[in-house]
Amino acid sequence: MTPDLLEQGARRVEAHRAHLSASYRSTASGGRDAGIGRFATPGEVDTTHGRILYLEDVSVSFDGFKAINRLSLDIAPGELRCIIGPNGAGKTTMMDIITGKTRPDEGRVFFGSTIDLLRHKEADIAQLGIGRKFQKPTVFEQLTVFENLELALKTNKGVKASMFFRLDSMQSDRLADILVTIHLADSVSRLAGNLSHGQKQWLEIGMLLMQDPKLLLLDEPVAGMTDEETARTAELFLTLKGRHSLMVVEHDMSFIKTISEIVTVLCDGAVLAQGTLDEVQADERVIEVYLGR
Ligand SMILES: Nc1ncnc2c1ncn2[C@@H]1O[C@H](COP(=O)(O)OP(=O)(O)O)[C@@H](O)[C@H]1O
Ligand SMILES: [Mg+2]
Image (cartoon, rainbow, N blue to C red; front, side, top):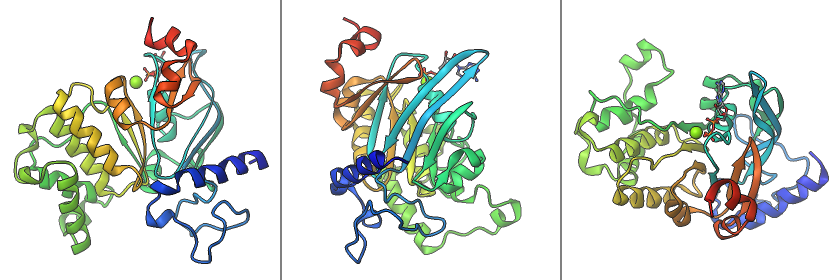
């Protein structure tokens, strides 16, 4: 990392201090957050340089077509970053790369400043604290809302461990909190199959939250939702911000307007523009390729 990037990181920590949850806050000794030479606790994501996710010069080709083309991007701890861009821009492929589903041909992808995601497999990356929500809801329709949330804790535990699995009191408390957060506290014993499309999406987000991810990647989360469901999802994301870092890909501009701070516009596999929604909407190049005249 260059001194320049470190300096940028230090500024980001300052800029985002307001959103940071207790675990991200300043050291007890009052040390500088972006100080050089501090060590992260093993198993924890080191965000002392002001970013939870960092992509540098990432490229991937499919049959000679560059879906991602020297993409560089970073996200601050607790940030809610919106990603917009035309179809085929590489938004989903970027998430595939972060989560280990697709290996890039070139570039660097870091979780915090010490975890090289390119050295980890897809399952490990989920364990490290990166949760991903695909476009289609994937809940277990034959199970209740409660059972779906409970099941989210059992995954990767093996059959025998799962059979004797019981929620401990901390997990029960978390489940109860999450039910409220995802607006499903009144539907605990309903079958997931009987929920509306929007409720299924919330349930799936709840299942991700059960694993307490540090970073959540959400691909077109409000597609197919009613206006009311979309508004409640915006509310939900705003409550998650700060406690988790979020990367949200969406086409719905009024939704983006409600939740966004920094918006990144992807086009042809790279960042075309970045700034507030007003800034990127006023950018001629963005209007040309995405927003239309
Ligand atoms: N596994 C794959 N094999 C071949 N081409 C792919 C694959 N994944 C994505 N692409 C291509 O890469 C480009 C970017 O796709 P995608 O990331 O899905 O875009 P977006 O999510 O922004 O709409 C598209 O042209 C798509 O056809
Ligand atoms: Mg996509």
